Length: 554
Ligand code: TEU
Ligand code: CA
Image (cartoon, rainbow, N blue to C red):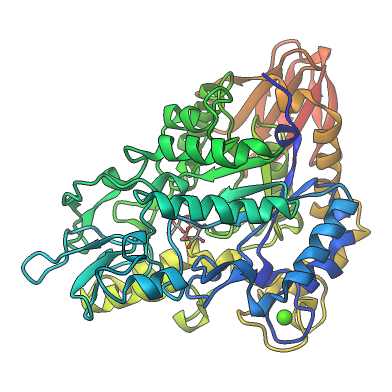
């Protein structure tokens, strides 16, 4: 495998709206990130993924962009952004920007033109279709509830929006549109950024048949995903984008790719194919979805999780490149979902840290995970801010679906869990702002915050710093092969990293019980790091305490 800086990178994800407010309007902003830049540097991470900061009416917190070449007023100015880039580069931290080009905002000038008339020059920049006897063109359901089609009364045609109606899908079949996109990519690359995270990039090519999808039981709408996930021209478009712009810069690109198999992932990220550097896929964060999808949850099943992680590690061991993460801004808090956010908060947060920084792929740490932030204890739906929740709520009322099941799903996997303000200290509003923030602070901020953990060598934060340094000092954790151990063990997740560099043995107890486990030739290894200060090892047997993890080196 070729060595690349982005394989060795450790990415810290910043959700600007919730990171740090510098001017007291209750909304995080670019100057706030600059205020905290020494903190970011102190973590030891070497890249930032910044969620969208472009001009946007914020129906979906910046994922609805109305001007791709300017900054959102809430977040500051282009000057502030330049300063941020500068400050990051001074500290050798790369900046990865979000690129949202499957759709734009309905307030983007292209869309405002497009809807003016059927013969407008920009009409074909979006996907317009005639209705079907007074009904939408097909039965597809939007990710954010309801039909993917919205009728425009002026021209009496429907436009496609896979997400909310304020996010019309761009028509990649149109070559002029594609080259406008390459131009805006170039605009940011010429400013010196180090790459892009590409929002739902495997949805840009739609199957032109626009056939109905299988009807879903709860809403009666259809699943259109076979017609827009990994569509017929997606690889052609990515190769074109790569040839026209990406290949001219030393950058990394990470494609957000829901619904990819490991083979698809290799197609997107294999280095000889000239498409993307890596994928960001979702299988392991869908394992607790119930039979109605996201809005009916079930327990996270450790065996399924383990087998899934193993599958991705093994299948991409020699070819392609994956992102490693346990949460992002669309997911609940990792320690609440995969660990134990009560009795074993510290232990399990550290366990997840060891796991994500010792698997193969580029690790992503979402803000707040490094201090073990937890899910928010939602009591009412009024505490939510996410359009996904509000749109679904309408459907729940209309179709008289089970409200308790819905609210329970919000608590367990709603996206607002990850979007509560970063907990800096024990002051009012957790030191995020000095007035009521746009979304509530998690009430546990007085115990869980950066200040309390900074000088505590047993804190989750100190552990993250140590583990990040270990990852940076040991290229074996990046490039060595991944070898699963004992796939059928029901409690322990263990694997080796074997190759040209030092060998590692990673042993992680994902349960809240003490478990004994034997490993061959354990005496040949030394302990590199553990989340417990004392480990009990007798010959080849480890007596693992709840959520105990050990990384050995040979
Ligand atoms: O997410 C796309 C996506 O498919 C999911 O993660 C989705 O948000 C989730 O499954 C909904 O249940 C990306 C962004 O990360 C997300 O924040 C945006 O809302 C979405 O695209 C639209 O741009
Ligand atoms: Ca602000």
